[in-house]
Length: 159
Image (cartoon, rainbow, N blue to C red; front, side, top):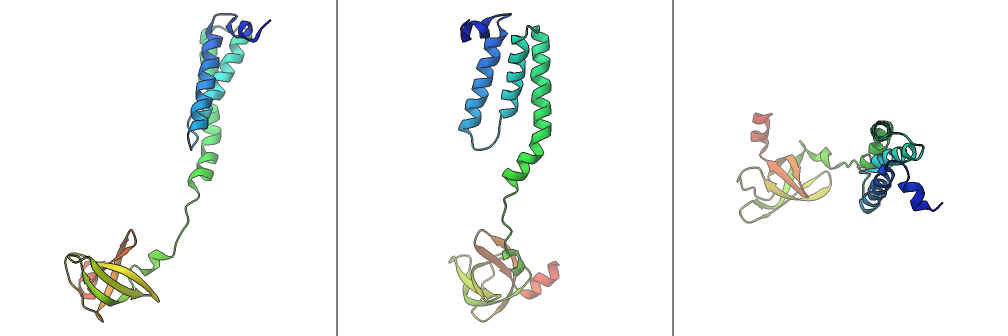
């Protein structure tokens, strides 16, 4: 008996499950993250049920049960490996620290730099305040690679 004869025997849903399983595997291989491997496993279970002569409603039950159980069983593990690779940095340590202005800080001119913790940062002021070299400012937050600073008096009033 040929493979296609085995797949199409019975009620005809075996071919549908085979196509669904292959489609899920193709989508899975073509994406970066796990998206539908669980449904491929469910389609495999439904296909096997169909090959053993199960009625369509039972094939559908097998599809949903295996898909949902495999999703529940593996999703936390998958999330740990896929999303757990964030690298913590020490950049946030400068927030709240006192900085010395090295280059005039002007948002209008898009200029400015400060020194904090022995490192030189590109800086912008919170609001439109202009700071001159030598002034002391406080690091408020980081936006991209720029340190947003404010005057110490303004920063202590807001906190």
